[in-house]
Length: 144
Image (cartoon, rainbow, N blue to C red; front, side, top):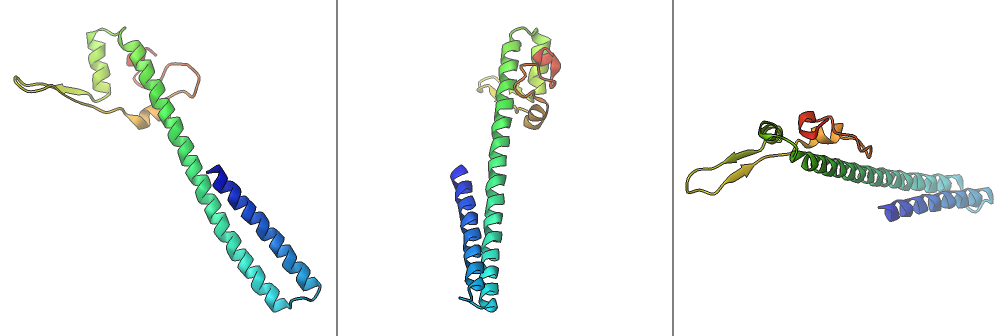
């Protein structure tokens, strides 16, 4: 996306140079005021489209950065839970499984079924950013 952003910035600079050339053409009486106004309106329209594209690219870049940060937070959370899980006794392990919404069901003659989810929003909103400190979510699970 950086190349796309650079291309937009290059196009905007080219439009500025084009506008200056039309101003000079008018100043040297090569074109009349009506033609200058037409050219300036066209340049303004193209600039607005480029600004809209630039905003879309920047929004996409921000969304990608936020997704990467969320993925790092989730990975950190899972690593911390994994590191501390072996230190928990059975009641706390059960609490950890419940906190993650994990359910294990089994019936005689049937395979074991495990269902669960990780609370992504809670993890991402409370996970530390590269601090190495323990998480605030599920403190008994993570040892916080």
